[in-house]
Length: 102
Image 1: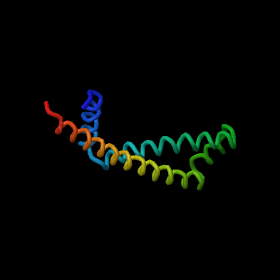
Image 2 (image 1 turned 180 degrees about the vertical axis):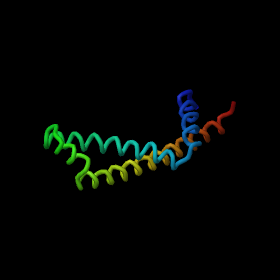
Image 3 (image 1 turned 120 degrees about the horizontal axis):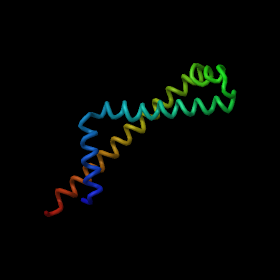
Image 4 (image 1 turned 120 degrees about the vertical axis):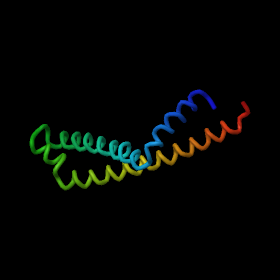
């Protein structure tokens, strides 16, 4: 295992010790919320300019609430997928470490 892989394994083991649920909530939903906020803001700015109407359209309209749900779902899906991919890498790296004679 390379030094970079060892470092990654150490970091991932710390993250994974906190649990999958926490990882998905903080990573996935956090990213989904961040993207929803800026996409909604930029879309409404281009449609309405910087006004109270723009802020209402960006964050309180049916469209905004609908998109909020989709971004949260997308964030959940991305975080879950990332968790699974990281678990595969962890198994691969730790298997290689066990098979390598010291």
